[in-house]
Length: 89
Image (cartoon, rainbow, N blue to C red):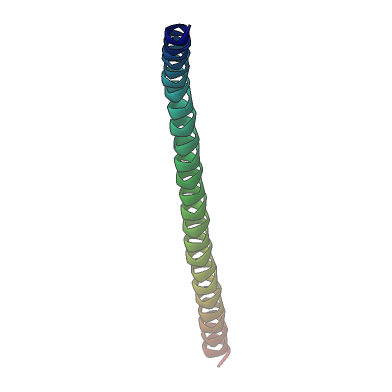
């Protein structure tokens, strides 16, 4: 009878270890997917930040371009006025 309990406990341990081994692979796969998802989210956040940074740089260039354009327009207008004054004199 005592040997029966030993055999039953060995069989139970065998089944538990088989269950644990099979569940371990599933758990490892879930952890791997979770890490990959987190890594992808970080990459996406970096891409988003880079797009924002690039957009700010483009906006700054555009602002400088428009400012310079307005300065040139103003200078041309002043030159045109000077030209008209010289013709009048």
